[in-house]
Length: 177
Image (cartoon, rainbow, N blue to C red; front, side, top):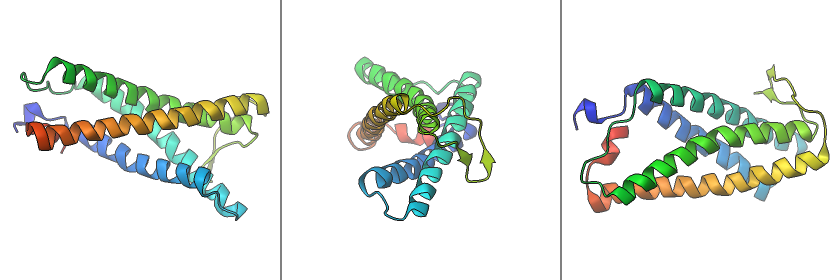
């Protein structure tokens, strides 16, 4: 595939870094929710990893969007059906939105529960809201809904990549590798 048909090196690097960090965020989040550790210190460490990496994902997503403005993505193959193009566009826009919203909502929920975030237990971040358990419950619910949505979108994204690789065999994956 010619370089003009690939994402820029920066876009590829940011994409794969985000993907790796999302594995960390999702793993820690599932661990916290479904296998809550009995050891309080370990549980707080998991929360801190989940929240701190979420902040990094938020910052990377902003960098990705700025990079995308400066370097628009390469066009899809002209023979890609319009429905697939629309699905890809909606999936990508939704993923970007949730990669921004999920860390923001999670950060606010943490604050509303009364836990200020210290990035990787080193750098304290300002708490924009005080303790408010009713708000914390609402924000936590929204964060949970967002987790289901982002999981679904990631699955759709992976299914699209598999479809292009194994069914259409159009080399689309090479744009991001």
